[in-house]
Amino acid sequence: MSVAAEIVRSWWSPRRTMARVLGSGAGEERALAFLMIACLLFFIARLPALQVRAEQADGLPFAGLAAGAALGAMILAPLVFYGLSTLSHWVARALGGRGSAFAARLALFWSLLAVAPLVLLVSALGTLPGLDQLTGRAGLAVGLLFLFIWVNSLLEAERAR
Image 1 (tube, one colour):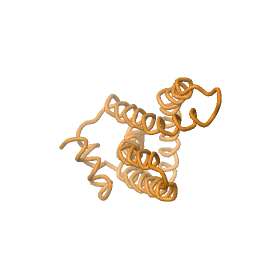
Image 2 (cartoon, rainbow, N blue to C red):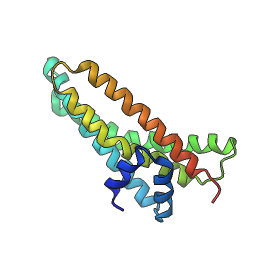
Image 3 (cartoon, rainbow, N blue to C red):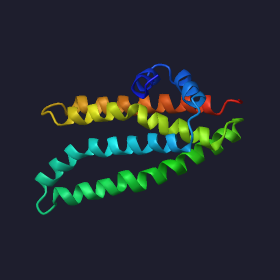
């Protein structure tokens, strides 16, 4: 099954989707690819807001803002997500989880990739005038969906195999 179809499927059935992702023989290289693609999409989603910020502030060049955001999204964020996945694995282990650290990483990285298209959509909504409240609510809904997918994916990843 294609990654795009699995992403959409994970919005309503994250445990089954994570079981398929884990069963596909995904290795560390695929987990890293999921993470880097998600981070790239999050960076792209930030660009419209950075453009508005550059236009509103005197002396802040868009290129500088974009370069800083790229550094954060492509270098710093992956390090933070690796740490967060390790922490989540330790917590799951303390609560009786039997999965591997790799499975916990894959659960987090897949969850980030699963919501990335929706983050792009919310970013696009944010460029339209007068939709501030809708954009805020949509962002909150995407955040809650991420938590739903991540928790369920982590539960699946920490099951005994």
